[in-house]
Amino acid sequence: MAERWERAMGTSAAAAVAPPRARRQFGGTPPPPPAGPDGQGGGGGGGNPWLPPRPPWHRRRGILLGAGVVAVIATTVVVDLPQKTTTASDTRQEATVIASINTDLAQCAFAVSEGFKIFKAAQSPSLSAANRARIPALLTDDVAACSFTNQSTFDLANIEVPGTAAGRKIGDAVATLSIWTTSDALGALTEIDKLTTDHPPRGIAAKERRELLTFERYAASDRAKVLADVAAASRDVKHTLKPPTIPVMPIGA
Image (cartoon, rainbow, N blue to C red; front, side):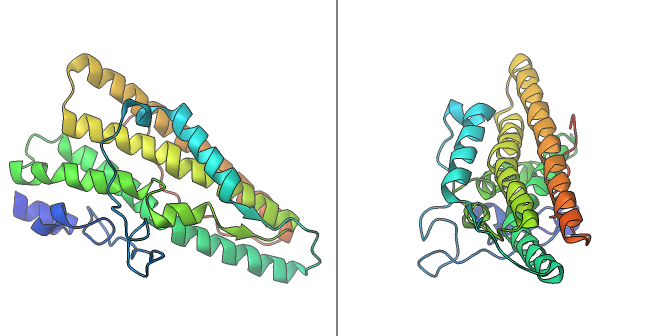
């Protein structure tokens, strides 16, 4: 079973001890890590990218959301001075910004897709003990990918957008995506981690599943907001802009 699982998922036995963003996956190749300020890969400028033990507040969307909003307000740069530009030039600028969004979003998006695959696999009674033992380290990595300890997630909140009408709508999408990553995705992955690795009693597990469902619904709502903002920007530039690639969280997984 272990060999079949590793071949199907593209993983290796060394994955459980590999550092974040320099490792395996459950079904695809993760994007390469960004360089930190010290020129090395990793999210914190050479610091430990693995999350410390999570205190209870880490699970609460209100606090996660508040932290995300504060970070967005503090770091998102919107060049809102009046600008004269042609429609063609504006279209190119918005497309370039969306490409940057995809680059910075990729690691968290990958972590979300992988996290739900792990959650599904963990519920199978046929999963081998060896593969099950690797799950906590994989989920720790995935949780970290959607937090501000990850350089790409931090960079997402620092994306600059043009000061045009379309640019301001893309800026709204960037702000919502920062909430999607550091609140919705982080919260959902945290609940998956608890359900999968802690094996809580029945009553507590039911509560964790309700909280996971809540994060899934918030994620769906925020994803819809991003798509709507990009669609509005498309109308401004009179050209269809391809929206960022945001994975869909299964509702009620």
